[in-house]
Structure formats: structure tokens, C-alpha cells
Length: 309
Image (cartoon, rainbow, N blue to C red; front, side, top):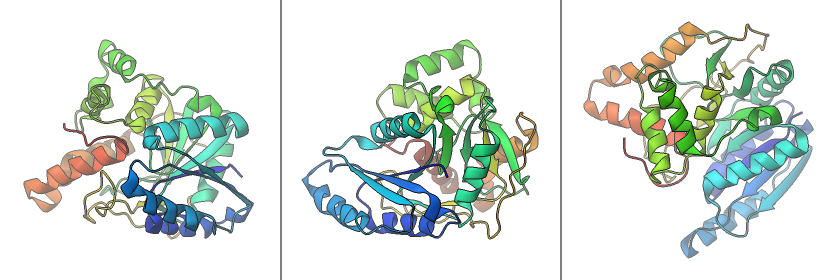
């Protein structure tokens, strides 16, 4: 089984729900769990960080559990970039979760099956566990260009393509005339989010991961039914305001992983674009448009200051 990297900070209840769901997964008892506990950013965070760490000492149900305590606060971006780099070098592949992601019992099976099936397919950069709540019925699995960040996996060969230089990524997108495609045909301003990262308005690792894969024409495998639920959309996190509008129902059945042709599923990609474009019309008020914009922005700006688009 691929090792699992879990990144935690100061939310003990979210961390507990994330770990307990993961422990109920098929193959959890055969999996190595490596937990990165970031240090407190200020004195007011010490008690919550300590509460998380006290809970982590009780975690069981896995083949082995390793806890990496950071002595100082790195922030999510640096923590993920360094942690993923370390584990990829040691194991060659990994599964990545954050402390506000509840998984289906079939998550680990899907991840490991897909990692094995596409290990020698260099066009595939990662595996993703979450899928947006689109209206349409999606294929069992499908490819889109780029990456996601809500429960994902990769190999060392994939992570080696990660470019932390946002300015370089933006220059390539603009020089090659790819910004509209990068923005899902203009349905969501991911390019603006990258510009905000360059300007220091966010410190998103995820937008750089997406851009890195996109520019290399690499694919990510998605499930047709979500294996991950984002429970951080409750006002508890730095980028998380309350609201259940974007919850997904975890699949009650396993996702069957079969080898697919290595190209973008045009219809599935169009469904995602329609989700971005049409969301405001599902409930009419303009506030829905702003709310959805904030939600997607939070997913790709999961560290640093809030962005403005």
C-alpha cells in the first residue's frame, strides 16, 4: 500500500473525523500513516496545536503511524511541499490528505489500484479522490488536464514536475496563450489566482501544482462519484466560511478502476466547466455566485492570506 501523508494544524475535531474515517478504510491496517503536525503560528494557537498532538498520540488502526512534529509554523504550503518531497524520495509514491477531508471506506482501495495501474504511464501525474457536485452523471473514472488537491496521490516522477515559481508558470501560460483553457474556458479565474500567489495575496501550493501539471500536458484521474468530503467548509479554517452548499455525498460503492485511453474526457471536463459557470443559477441570488467563487478559491488557496479576484 502507498504511504499516506496527513497534514494537520490546530483543529482537533476535524483531525479526529478525518483519521477515524481513514481508519475505517479497506487496507488501512496495511497502510503506513505519516502525520505532519505544524507548529503554532502564535501563542493563541498553542493549546489547539497541543490538543491535536495529544489526539495523534492515540491514533491506531494502521500498519504503522509516524508523527512528525514541526517545532515552528511552516504554513500549509511549505509543510505540504516539503512533506510530499520527503515521502516521495523515500517511498516513490504517496497519498495526501489534509485535516478536513473525510474519506469513503473505498478511498484507499481506489487510490492504490489507480497508483498501480498508471504507475508506468508518464502522461498521468496524479490520482484525485474528490469530484465537484456536477449535475450530470459522470463516467466511473475519467481524466482531465492538470491536478486537484482534495485527497490526491502521485509518484515521485509526477511530483518532480512541480514548479514552485509562480512567475515562471504564469509567463508560460501567457506566452503559450493557454490562460483561457487554464481557466476552464473562462468559467473560473484560476489565472487570477496564480497572479495573486505571485503578488503574495495567497501562498497556494495547489494553484502551482495545477499549473505545473497543466503546462506539462499531464492528466489526473478523477472518480465519477466522490470518495472525499470537504468538512472544512464550516467557518473553522482560515479560508472556510460556513455553508453546506458544496457538500458531496460519499459513494456507497467502490469505484472500479480500469485502464482508460490517456486523454482528456471532453464531456466530463465540460460538466465541470458547467458546474463553475452555472452554479449561481441553481439558487438565483448573486450571493451564490460569490459563495461558489470563494469555495473554489479556498480549495486552491488552502494556505496564506485570503485572495481577491
